[in-house]
Length: 160
Image (cartoon, rainbow, N blue to C red):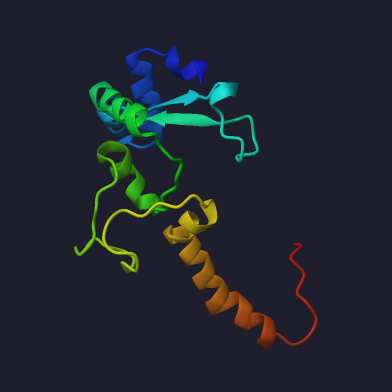
């Protein structure tokens, strides 16, 4: 990493162009348009139910918006909750925040609990709403589980 950040603009462009001609413009767009930054949480701010000392906070709001949130939080309190969203939505989520897609063509899940953005205190529940888990379940149900029951004969070797 140090090698990359100490390069001149020309050297960086050459290095990135060697990978792909759009690498440098993409990096410039990410750096110039992204407000997000990650901060390691101090011991006193870490969440006890997350069993690791490696916890981070992603700041994504403008300072004025964050100050307004802190003011309301200090008046009414807050709760920790998780939102499950597919990976392809996270660039938009980081840049614009969560959007209420209820009753629009962008809605991905049924609104069993009325309209709005859904959160859960359970990571398992939130994770089930991401497309990744849905894809894993689809592949398991469609290809892996039936294959267990259809397979006859000795198990194939995975070694080459």
